[in-house]
Length: 130
Ligand SMILES: [Zn+2]
Image (cartoon, rainbow, N blue to C red; front, side, top):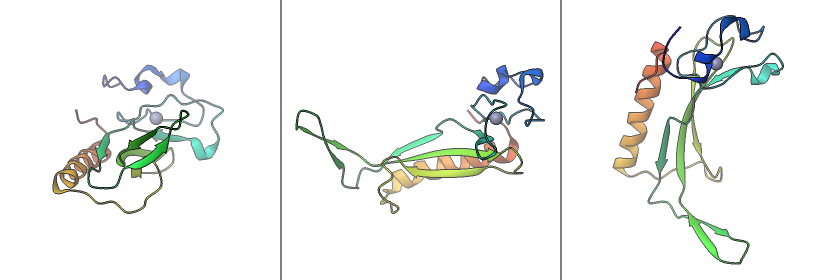
Protein backbone atom coordinates (compact mmCIF):
# COMPACT_ATOMS: atom_id res chain seq x y z
CA UNK A 1 0.00 0.00 0.00
CA UNK A 2 1.27 3.46 -0.86
CA UNK A 3 1.12 6.49 1.41
CA UNK A 4 0.42 9.17 -1.14
CA UNK A 5 -2.75 10.42 0.49
CA UNK A 6 -5.16 9.64 -2.36
CA UNK A 7 -8.73 8.74 -1.44
CA UNK A 8 -8.25 5.11 -2.44
CA UNK A 9 -5.39 4.68 0.01
CA UNK A 10 -8.18 4.60 2.56
CA UNK A 11 -10.09 1.96 0.58
CA UNK A 12 -8.81 -1.38 1.88
CA UNK A 13 -8.87 -4.52 -0.21
CA UNK A 14 -11.87 -5.99 1.62
CA UNK A 15 -13.76 -2.73 1.05
CA UNK A 16 -13.01 -2.52 -2.67
CA UNK A 17 -15.96 -3.06 -5.02
CA UNK A 18 -16.22 -6.54 -6.53
CA UNK A 19 -15.18 -5.25 -9.96
CA UNK A 20 -11.92 -3.68 -8.73
CA UNK A 21 -9.47 -6.55 -8.31
CA UNK A 22 -6.29 -4.48 -7.94
CA UNK A 23 -5.41 -1.35 -5.95
CA UNK A 24 -5.96 2.01 -7.59
CA UNK A 25 -3.02 3.82 -9.21
CA UNK A 26 -1.47 6.29 -6.77
CA UNK A 27 -2.89 9.21 -8.76
CA UNK A 28 -6.51 8.02 -8.43
CA UNK A 29 -8.50 10.37 -6.22
CA UNK A 30 -11.83 8.53 -6.18
CA UNK A 31 -13.57 6.12 -3.88
CA UNK A 32 -15.19 3.32 -5.88
CA UNK A 33 -18.43 1.46 -5.15
CA UNK A 34 -20.09 -1.82 -6.09
CA UNK A 35 -23.05 -0.01 -7.60
CA UNK A 36 -21.10 2.06 -10.16
CA UNK A 37 -22.25 1.29 -13.73
CA UNK A 38 -19.57 -0.09 -16.05
CA UNK A 39 -19.11 3.23 -17.89
CA UNK A 40 -18.28 4.97 -14.59
CA UNK A 41 -15.76 2.38 -13.40
CA UNK A 42 -12.78 4.63 -13.93
CA UNK A 43 -9.78 5.72 -11.92
CA UNK A 44 -9.73 9.51 -11.96
CA UNK A 45 -7.18 12.06 -10.86
CA UNK A 46 -8.11 15.29 -9.21
CA UNK A 47 -7.57 18.45 -11.25
CA UNK A 48 -3.83 18.40 -12.01
CA UNK A 49 -3.49 21.59 -14.00
CA UNK A 50 -5.48 24.76 -14.49
CA UNK A 51 -4.15 27.23 -17.05
CA UNK A 52 -5.84 30.59 -17.54
CA UNK A 53 -5.80 31.63 -21.21
CA UNK A 54 -5.14 35.33 -20.81
CA UNK A 55 -5.24 36.37 -24.46
CA UNK A 56 -8.65 34.88 -25.22
CA UNK A 57 -11.70 37.12 -24.91
CA UNK A 58 -13.31 36.64 -21.52
CA UNK A 59 -16.80 35.20 -21.40
CA UNK A 60 -19.49 37.71 -20.39
CA UNK A 61 -21.88 36.35 -17.77
CA UNK A 62 -25.07 38.11 -16.69
CA UNK A 63 -25.66 38.14 -12.93
CA UNK A 64 -29.09 38.04 -11.28
CA UNK A 65 -28.97 41.78 -10.64
CA UNK A 66 -28.31 42.53 -14.35
CA UNK A 67 -24.64 43.31 -13.76
CA UNK A 68 -21.99 41.55 -15.79
CA UNK A 69 -18.93 39.52 -14.92
CA UNK A 70 -16.17 38.52 -17.27
CA UNK A 71 -14.86 35.01 -16.76
CA UNK A 72 -11.53 34.11 -18.36
CA UNK A 73 -11.26 30.89 -20.35
CA UNK A 74 -9.18 28.23 -18.66
CA UNK A 75 -7.72 24.94 -19.75
CA UNK A 76 -8.03 22.16 -17.16
CA UNK A 77 -6.00 18.97 -17.19
CA UNK A 78 -6.93 15.65 -15.60
CA UNK A 79 -6.21 11.97 -16.06
CA UNK A 80 -8.44 8.91 -15.95
CA UNK A 81 -8.30 5.23 -16.78
CA UNK A 82 -11.03 2.63 -17.18
CA UNK A 83 -10.67 -0.26 -14.75
CA UNK A 84 -10.02 -2.66 -17.65
CA UNK A 85 -7.83 -0.30 -19.68
CA UNK A 86 -4.06 -0.75 -19.56
CA UNK A 87 -3.10 2.94 -19.71
CA UNK A 88 -4.55 6.28 -18.63
CA UNK A 89 -5.88 9.07 -20.85
CA UNK A 90 -5.15 12.75 -20.39
CA UNK A 91 -8.07 15.14 -20.59
CA UNK A 92 -7.68 18.77 -21.62
CA UNK A 93 -10.93 20.60 -21.10
CA UNK A 94 -11.93 24.20 -21.55
CA UNK A 95 -13.84 24.78 -18.34
CA UNK A 96 -16.68 26.70 -20.00
CA UNK A 97 -16.89 24.02 -22.73
CA UNK A 98 -17.63 26.62 -25.39
CA UNK A 99 -14.45 26.60 -27.44
CA UNK A 100 -12.49 23.82 -29.06
CA UNK A 101 -9.65 26.11 -30.09
CA UNK A 102 -7.24 27.76 -27.69
CA UNK A 103 -4.87 30.68 -28.00
CA UNK A 104 -1.99 30.24 -25.58
CA UNK A 105 0.92 32.54 -24.85
CA UNK A 106 4.35 30.95 -24.74
CA UNK A 107 4.15 30.98 -20.93
CA UNK A 108 0.72 29.34 -21.00
CA UNK A 109 1.93 26.72 -23.47
CA UNK A 110 4.90 26.09 -21.17
CA UNK A 111 2.50 25.55 -18.24
CA UNK A 112 0.49 23.07 -20.30
CA UNK A 113 3.67 21.28 -21.42
CA UNK A 114 4.94 21.07 -17.84
CA UNK A 115 1.62 19.68 -16.64
CA UNK A 116 1.41 17.22 -19.53
CA UNK A 117 4.94 16.00 -18.78
CA UNK A 118 3.95 15.55 -15.14
CA UNK A 119 0.78 13.63 -16.10
CA UNK A 120 2.68 11.44 -18.56
CA UNK A 121 5.21 10.56 -15.84
CA UNK A 122 2.37 9.83 -13.40
CA UNK A 123 0.64 7.68 -16.00
CA UNK A 124 3.74 5.73 -16.95
CA UNK A 125 5.03 5.14 -13.44
CA UNK A 126 1.71 4.88 -11.63
CA UNK A 127 3.12 7.26 -9.03
CA UNK A 128 2.15 10.75 -8.00
CA UNK A 129 4.63 13.43 -8.90
CA UNK A 130 4.51 16.16 -6.34
ZN1 LIG B 1 -9.31 4.29 -8.50
